[in-house]
Image (cartoon, rainbow, N blue to C red; front, side, top):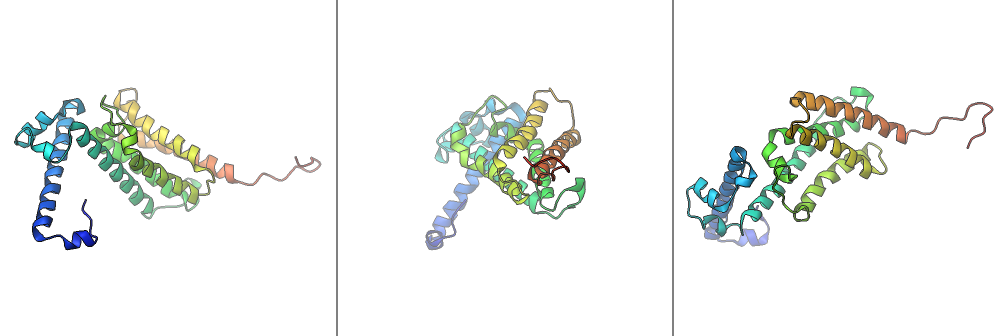
Length: 228
């Protein structure tokens, strides 16, 4: 991604052309890595395999990435950004605020959570890389801020719905959605996409109902019973 600030505006036509060529080359390498993983898994992604895939010399990818791990990190960071954007777009979309008796702020949480699950199902290989589900791990610290942005988005939605301490509920909702995907990936849950969404929706109904009950004022004392 290039900047549109003063330095970018001052770039010569030749510099802008080189920037475009560099961005296009990086995109080609990243797309090739994703294609290899889709066919043969992330373990099969090597610099030599990528050179064969894009029909360039073995050193071509080293002009744009320091090595295989750098390519995987770029894919993971891009995956988290795309996941965040998909959830944000779903949360902002108009919806029915009366479903399940939810208040106006709660349906956005539901839509964001289902968008998370949709991303994990439609971008299965990328999601596996993001969370190390295919035996290849990118150090979590390297993409920490990108992953944290997803949690922060859900936390902000919960805060808008009245959760004064959203952290634990973010973890519970994330664990549910991620757990369904991980269990399906290893064959421990036999369900199609609709089935997983139904399971997630049940968990959301329970968790968000508890949110309302947590924030509800205590009932008045029964006649003759002193308040605590």
